[in-house]
Image (cartoon, rainbow, N blue to C red):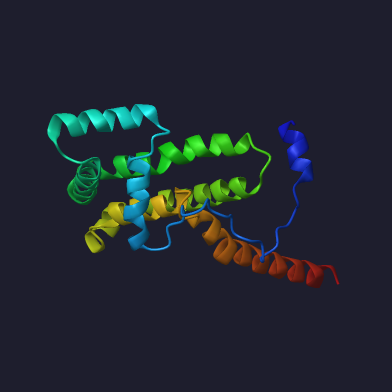
Length: 192
């Protein structure tokens, strides 16, 4: 089906009461307590043969478990995002790489929920990019800005959290609906 035909089937306005996407069983992260089991499931997933082979070789060579490596890399990355010279670049690269790949894959599907996820994500990403102009001022007040931004972008982009979809359903769609209503009222007032 062509992109043009897909566009014709989509509704013009979306309902505020639309359901959030459903996660695969045991794949949803609702709190920090859910992160560790999901990380372990990802690190020990045998479906990704290349990643599994790399981790197995690392474990054999060093005697260090793969989750310890993951937590060490995460801690070093967090530290770099706080004090590193290129923290902005690293943060934006993390916020761009997977979402760009997933967005292209979403465009190829007929589903509209994944499109909503990624359109919302890119809208928020663009908003943060505007804030980045003032990063030097923000960093004086909030030295953890790049770390906080990266955590928020991961929350929005990871399929385990559905962060962008939640943001869309609870904040973006209601705000746009109110804005549309206000514009329609003013338009009617001007035409009377």
